[in-house]
Image 1: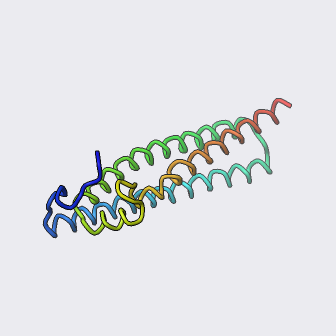
Image 2: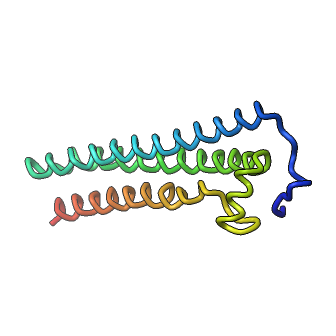
Image 3: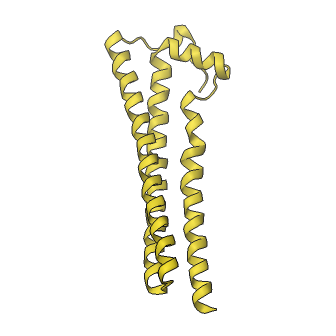
Length: 148
């Protein structure tokens, strides 16, 4: 699908443009708020693990909490990935309906370029993956220390 030119662009009323713009900004905010919420949750769990490990490194405590932390991370990744796809869909609609937005993106990325929202894609991918790697490394550490 090529870049929409002005004559090919669907026509929308000012109210429709305002609603889709507001919806796009709302979804983007939810995306980033969720990223912050899960980052805070994961950091809290890791802090608890660090404090408890210094007190008593019990495998019976750390294996379940590490599995829960990893499960939260995988859930977070799945939710963020799905929401990312939806945000991309909404931003595509905004590009189609809002000529100024389309012109701004074309000037920044060139015709047919990605949305400004695509800047957030590395965050959606890398932050949960880094937390997952941390949980796996912590689990391996706990198991190696317990067996050794």
